Structures are given as C-alpha cells and as structure tokens.
Length: 160
Image 1 (cartoon, rainbow, N blue to C red):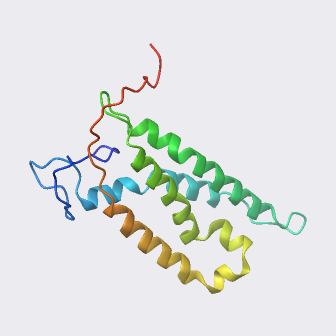
Image 2: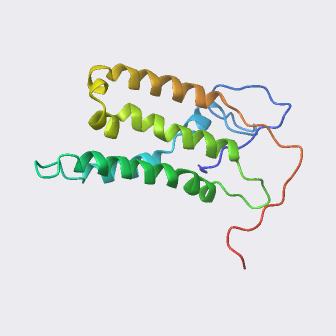
C-alpha cells in the first residue's frame, strides 16, 4: 500500500468502507490509515522512551527533552510526507500533508508526553486527550480530496 492518498474524481460519491475492487481512490479506512503519521509517531515514541528520567540536579531535563523531540518530529512530519507521497506526473497531495501535520500534535497530546510533564492539570484531565484523539482521527478520515482540475507541474525533488 502506498503512503499517498489516492484521489477520487470529482464525480465520485463519498465511500466510507475500504477501497472496493475496481474503484478509483481510497476509501475511508485507507485514508484514515494514511492520514495518521504512524512512522513519525513511532519515531517520537522511540526517542522519548530513551530520554532519561529527570534527576534532582536537572529537574526539567526530561520535560525539555520531550518538548524538543516533539517539535523536531512535528517539523519532520510535512517533510517526510512530502517525500513519501510524491508520484511522478501527479500534483503534491497538500491536503494529506496538512492533515497529517495536524494529526501528529493531536497524537502527542493524547499520548501525554511533554503535556503530562509540563501541565499539572493533564494527569487529572487525561480524558481530554482521549476524546481529542478519537474525534480527531475519526474526522480526519472523512476528508476526501478531489481531483484538481488544473495540473500543476512541480519541479523534481532532486535535480538531474
């Protein structure tokens, strides 16, 4: 399965199931899976899990490190998706890149990470993150990009 959301033509109806055979474009479940930046979330989780716990001499070390990792991963999200969703002769799927770039901080908020370390209210109100991720993920999958009427010729990623 490609990382790129396959676009339906403007005349296609909204389809909420998996991509039916012989149909063009991705169904709801395929779009949902492609909008979630799973590789970046895995990168974030892997790197934050190796950050040492704060010691008394550096009480905010873990908090600062997780914020830095979250920021770097958030910056990496659009770059990674720009590269992995490129398709020769097709326009860049900016809606997918934007949705995934918004989805990453939503996932970080739901996981806890720097929010849990920085804000005392977060541990008491963890349900806010849970509801945010559920609705955010559900709603993201509903967005179905349409085929552009104008083809924009983009420069190659790497010059020959």
